[in-house]
Length: 172
Image (cartoon, rainbow, N blue to C red):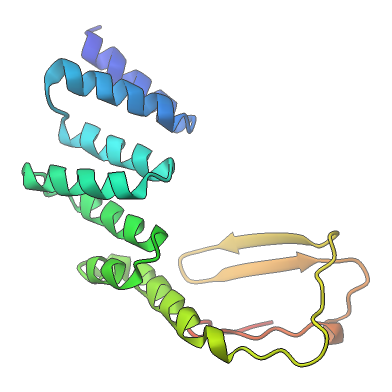
C-alpha cells in the first residue's frame, strides 16, 4: 500500500471518529509532501476547519481553493455554513440561494434575521418562569419537521404555553 493511500485512510478514519485536529495535521503533512491538496483533500481540510470552529480560517481557505480552480458545490456550501456560524446571515443567504436544495438553510438564516429584528419587541408580563433543572429535552428533526419534546413529571397540558416564532408552522 502506498504512503498516500495510508495517509488518506488515516485522514478519513480520524474524521469519522471526530478527531478533526489530528486530521488537520495529517492534511497539512500531505500538503507539504505534495505541495498541494486534491479537491477531496481540500474539502476534508475545510470540513475539519469548520468542525473545529475555525470559521474565519475556513473562509480564507475556501477563497484560496476557489481561486486555484476548485469549483465543487461542497466548497460553496461550507462557505455558507461558516457565514451562518459567524452570524453573517445575509452573506449566507446569498450563498444558499444558489441551489434549491439549500433552501432550508436560507430559511434558517431568514429566521435568525427575524429573531434579531424582533429582539426588542419581546415583552414579558409578570414574573419570569424559571425552567426546572429536571426537565429533559429531546429533539428529533426530519427534512420537513422539527419535534422538540420537554419531559417533566406532573406537567399538565394547560400549564404549558408555546409561542411559535416566525417561520414555524405549528406548536403543539
